[in-house]
Image (cartoon, rainbow, N blue to C red; front, side, top):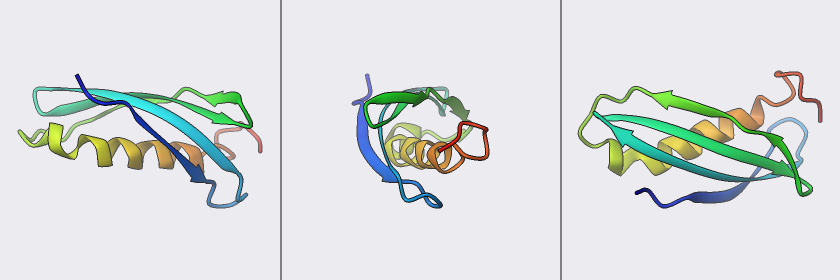
Amino acid sequence: MATPIEGTHQHAKSGKVFAYRADYRTEDGDIHWWAEIEQEGEVRLKPEGHLATQTPAAEAIAPAAVRDAVVKAIDGIDEAGQGL
């Protein structure tokens, strides 16, 4: 089982800091991920996704790929109508 990924990210436009917890599993060279994103202790978003890497190295690249996907979700919060 993968080690959960935790961290923070400062929103690219607003400068607000978001905390996140993410997890993932790899299957057949692909990465399935899910996360919980909080701001000031309140859950703002629970994104999830599928990264079709189709590589035997999926487990090795998963932590960075998932982190990148979560950061993209955070930076897209205002565009998704979530408001800041």
